[in-house]
Length: 115
Image 1: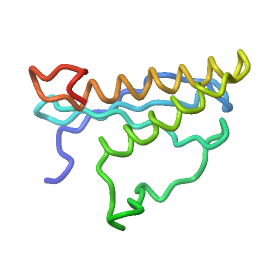
Image 2: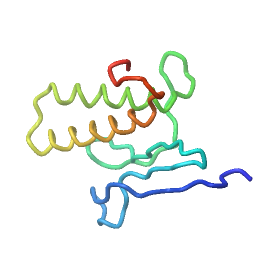
Image 3: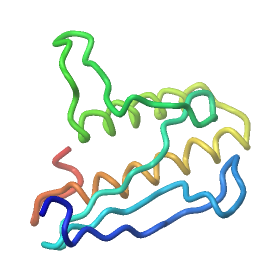
């Protein structure tokens, strides 16, 4: 049966919602593989998502890895603009969550520098 053996773990809580709202959810399959789902933010606010992004050049759905890397690149550019302390902390927190998700996507034996 599809979905048999799936487990969900809530991770970070808080954000703009009460502490009962998870800001990261880890999905683990029966084989122990996992991924982390985090809300999409725009200007620091959670936005509704259709669950995919279209690549401008190819006009096809991007992989999870590509989405994470694109989001991280945009956040790094925002850091270069010398944001205020609060915004910097928020951006750095988002980058840390993306790095965690990227680590979970790595193949065994692959280093973070290979991305």
